[in-house]
Amino acid sequence: MGPLHTYSVTVDWTGAGERGTESYTAYSRDHVVMIEGKPSLPGSADPAFRGDADRYSPEELFVASLSQCHMLWFLHRAAVAGVVVTGYTDRATGTMRVETAGAGQFTEVTLHPRITTATDVSEDVIVDLHQQAHDHCFIARSVNFPVRHVPLTTQVAEPA
Image (cartoon, rainbow, N blue to C red; front, top):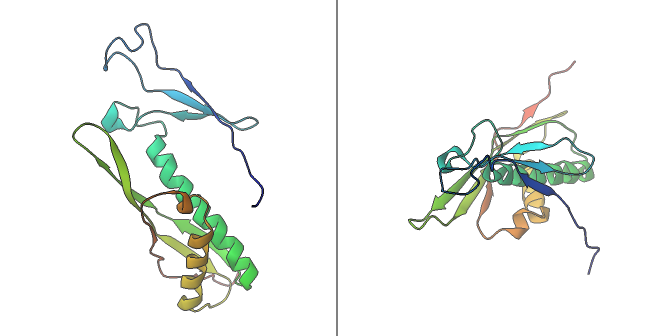
């Protein structure tokens, strides 16, 4: 068994106001996510659940974490394969189903990475690198729903 890594965060609810959870509509969903040595991240619920649209929701951050993990593994695998990546942008989407009783779960996340390389690279190589990234991503390997990757066309960087 390999090494274990532990990640610590503090989540501090700041939305109690004067009435706390006196009723479902009495309190704010605002909170702050804190990680030692890093800027605080303002969080809230999704606006559909009485949250503040100007703050990050856990659902958004969850989709972002899957996208980040895939990207970091893709870049690693590309470097090992000798593929020089000079740009990477992903417009990831996640779908969550909410049941009538209020509980719910994500049903899928789809990554749409657009890659820029220094030289022409075959799409087969890019597809293989995405599969390797998917197979290694700690977060994608930890969820119980499909994480799909639908790469957009790879571009070759223009000469400077």
